[in-house]
Amino acid sequence: MNIVVLIKFVPDLVEDLEIDSQSGLLDRSFLRLIPNELDDHALEEALLLKERHGGTVTVLTIDSGDVDETLYTAVAKGADKVVKIAGEGFDQGVSNRRLSSIFQDVLKETSCDLILTGTQAVDDLDGFVGALLAEQMGLPYIGYVTRVEARNGTVIARKEYPGGLNADIEVNKPAVLGIQAAEKPPRYIVTSKVMEAMKSATIDEAEAGGEAVEAGVTVSRMSVPETGAHAEMIEGDVQEVAETLAGLLRDRGVVA
Image (cartoon, rainbow, N blue to C red; front, side, top):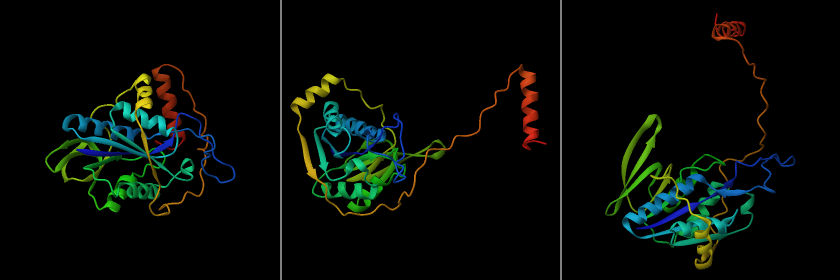
């Protein structure tokens, strides 16, 4: 089974995010970009499928953030081929419509059984990349997948629904799957393994093509959440706290 995994780079939410006073958008001047967490789960699910059924895993991403380190780490984990797509302005952000078009252009000459990507990314939470790519390539798409089982010519994807419901859906290959969570936590690789991959592995390169499509939604302004009112701490024993709380609720019209 030949599997392609798509990785998107997103802002590291551990760091402080700042708004550009001129544009009103996220200031990307010194922004650290890291691989999207759910894309890492997609890679883990692909590696599990490879270990069970054989085949290859190819990782595809655009040239942004610490892309080389990310790709060498993927090789250390078990990926067979890694591809970096070069283009202008990728560190300044790429819309999901443009990103799916770039991936589609690179993959149109590639033969694969499955394309895996994270269900969504933390920078937009819209989950469009996998669905848009599937539409552009004329392939079936299933999102919010938590388990994949391979059969002859098909795969069974376990899709997660709200309320704790799950459905096992059989789909013909090739297909695009949006991974919500891998069956196991993404594997940890020690630095020495990554260093070995840097010495032995080769990162293939491709040029960004595809249509220069516009995003479906344009962000006009961003802002830091406003600071709310202060918290009032209620002190005393249980009876005193209960009476004070009841009085506050009556004063504010919450209860009669």
